[in-house]
Length: 371
Image 1: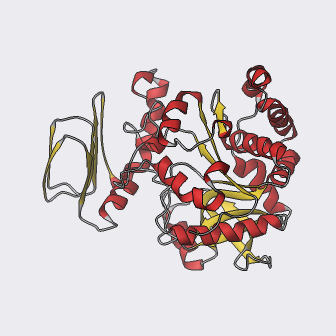
Image 2: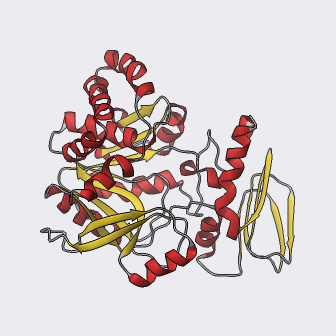
Image 3: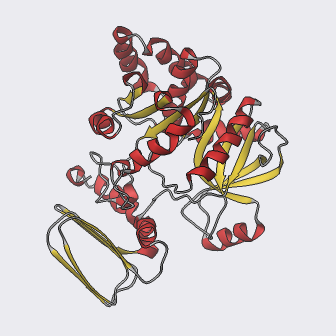
């Protein structure tokens, strides 16, 4: 086994409900706590197993909601208690990653941190390690590094990073400057990006020295960083932590780290991207699950069910069932059926990204019992 990277600490933000995977993913059972690939492991467990060789099991911090602590610790018995950071309410990625960075910097001033989402799927562990190793080298040189995924198709469900010239960093020969970010494009634009070859999928993987990341965030959001650093000062004192969280956390600004760190860092030439050629999927909707479960083969029906009977005649797509009812599909293509005890979703792979709008509508109507 390869040795852990010197001075490196992994952070796993495990938040969000994965609203495009409703009604399977819920507030009390978010997608990172599900086995969506058929591997026998949840996405969170898979993330831990991928990161442990890079930083060591003792150097992985998980940031999650208070309601998920028991489930997270059951999935990760190796997780040290001091490396569990609980959010009293969701505050987006700047607060989650920033607090972890502030705590770790206080414990270890020169620490290099890497943030990796709890709900992504990567099979090529060696390719992933190679990209992280290069990103750590860039971090040692004082840069903030992203790992961008080399596109394999004109995907419209991901944000894109535009890569510029070579950054010329020792130990990170493939690092490139970042010249811009693009939100999820339409299909024609995504096809153009794929043809041009300078665009990478934004996988939201950040690697940097903790002090560099916090100073960059401070330039854009000084009040946010002041609150995070005050929390970090109290964090390892059990008597002080609770009162500090109650006083500070509710007032922290809710903002994604792309806006508080990545975009400002790109404007001043501090941000680089490492092109990752390994397979990657953020399992963002049911079409993604269907593709993963079928191995990318078209025209097949993927089934994620325990106890259900699924009958298929010239049908393709995916069936997810948590009931024991008989489900029969005849002559339907690229269908998505998600059957749970209190909610049923029927759509198609083409419209799988629109499931989030159903969740938004349920919130507006006050139907929180099914969320």
